[in-house]
Length: 60
Image (cartoon, rainbow, N blue to C red; front, side, top):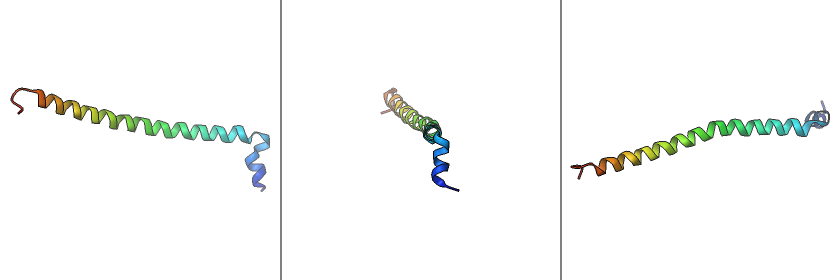
């Protein structure tokens, strides 16, 4: 098997491999972005609860 021909895919290699690459990027982003957002929201909620507790009367 000639690897050059395999990767060229009959002249459509650029379109095929760029599609695979784009799909991989999208799948990785679909994993990363919600995890990053969850981390950010949890940090903001912890800060909110800390501020809320410190502003309540009798918390000093």
